Image 1 (cartoon, rainbow, N blue to C red):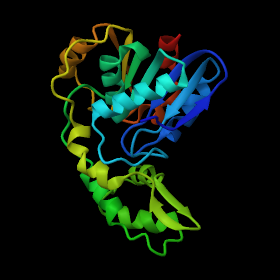
Image 2 (image 1 turned 120 degrees about the vertical axis):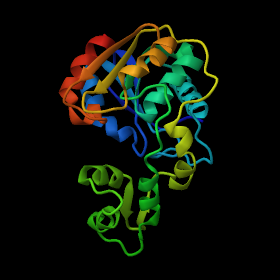
Image 3 (image 1 turned 135 degrees about the horizontal axis):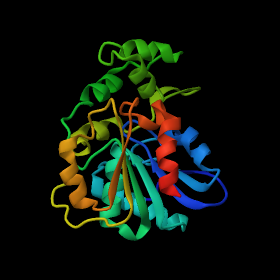
Image 4 (image 1 turned 45 degrees about the vertical axis):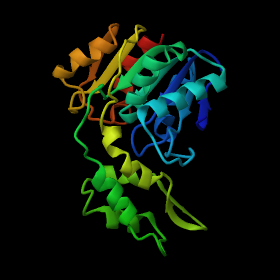
Length: 254
C-alpha cells in the first residue's frame, strides 16, 4: 500500500524517514526541516499509524513492501532510508528485500533481533481509556498514569489522541497493533542475503536496544556498517539529542 507522505525541502538528494511504534511522520518534523536545507526529505506514516490506512495485518515484510511502493510512487529512488525503532527494522528489511530503492541505510536505535514484548501495557491502557465526554488531554493523561508512570512516555502516546468537535479518539489502529506486537518486537525468520550499501547504525548511549552482542547479527546482514553512539541519548535519539544526532547523520548522508 502507498503510505501518506509529508515532504520537506525542494532540492538535494532524497531522504526518507520513518517513525517507531505509536509514532508518525510528525515525530521527524524538526529533524526533517533541518535536513531539508540540503535534501528532499519525505516523512512516512507507516501502516496503522498516523494518517495511514487501517489494515488488519502489519508484518515487517508487508511494511517493507509499503515502503518500496511508496518510494517508487514518489519517483525519487534510490533514497537514503532512515528509520527509528520499528521504523528501523522496517528500513533494514526494505534494504534487504528491495535494495533497488535504497541508496544508503540509517538505523536508529534498533537491531535485527527479537526484543522481549514490552508495549502491551501501553496499548491496553490506551484502549481501556474512557474517551466519552473528554474535554481536555489531561483527562486522558490521568487515566494512563497508572499503567504508564513516566510523564514523557504518556506525552508521547497522547500525541496519538485526536480531540475535536467529534470527540476524542485514538489515531492509530490499536487493536491491530496490539495483536501484532510479538512480530513488531521480533525479527522475521528466514531472512538471508545481505545489503551491501553504506549503512549507519546510530544508537543512544543510555539505551539498551543496540548491544555489543548484536553486532554479529548486524554485520552478517550489513557488511558495510559503521556505528555511532549519541552518548547522552536514550531510545528516542533524534528527539532527545537532535543536534548530536544530526552531527553524525549529516556527514553520512553527504
